[in-house]
Image 1 (cartoon, one colour):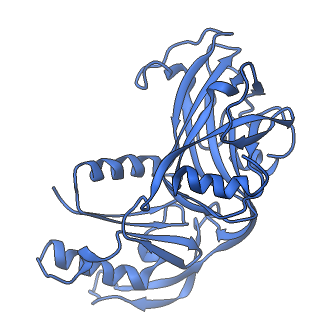
Image 2 (cartoon, helix red, strand yellow):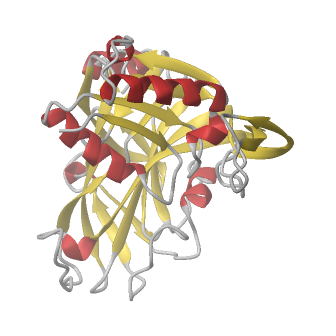
Amino acid sequence: TASVFAIHGMQDLNVRTKHFGQWWDALADNGVERKVWLSQTGHVDPFDFRRSAWVPTLHRWFDHYLMGYDNGIDDEPMADIERAPDRWTTDRVWPAAGTSATTVRPRNGSAPGVGELGTRRAPHGATETFTDDPRLNEEDWAAQVDTSTPAKAGFTTKPLAKPLRLSGSGKVTVTATPSTTTAHLSAVLVDLGPDTIRNYGAAGEGITTLADRTCWGASTTGDSACYKETKADTLNVGHTVFSRGWADLGNWANPGKGRPLTPGKPYTITLDLAASDHVVPAGHRLALIIAGTDAGLIDPPSTSPRLTLDLARTAARLPVVGGGKALAAATTGAGGA
């Protein structure tokens, strides 16, 4: 029954945005009045990534919902989203208006593990195979998405003719045949193209703390109201992982109860992708990578499985703003979907 003002780093790998996304959807289902800020940081307090806006906004929020002041904050845009370091946009609702779950499908490509991503279903019997390597993570896979490597299967669109925005939570349904009795799966979405982002993987998770201090409110003997200033810690990259999801294939029948797998038998499971809001610019490519252990983020299985994907029974349902028409406009003009 309480109003909710949620702030989350889209690259927060501690309190993960999968959890935020599921909660946000439940709030919407129950008609809860809500507002959200989504930053490019990791696990960082909004006081440290947007201080001058955060303090007055928080006061106005509590003035309205606790004190009953009609200050208009409930009529303002629901969402503030950081598109680039310190560059924010707003949306009246979130996920963005016109967002719909849109299916993209993997197909074989020019080499093993180097596939295509589009709207056409793969032919019956098409497969890709990889072996779980618990030493590697999503950054390793993304850096070699165009190279045939044994530990991942990567699928990419052609360079986009128009920007493509994904807003909200997606899902990837995978049909995989393991070679052992245990197997873990990862699925990640990647924007393939150059960009400048907050350096969320560094110690500050996207911010640098400065020496100068500014004061916010009154200090007391035991509690100073003066805090060190911060600035964005930025990084130039060639690709950006912007959503990810993981699953234990042994939970294929029951999310709450795992069971041993039968080697050589196919299993179908759906991985929930972390909530995000990302624009893949024109000229960039969208990639879906499916692999095993995402090192540093999930634990490896007790075995080292070789997994065979049934591409005809594998697909992603992504929250595309503009739905199928937007996907077609972005991919068809770029050389086919």
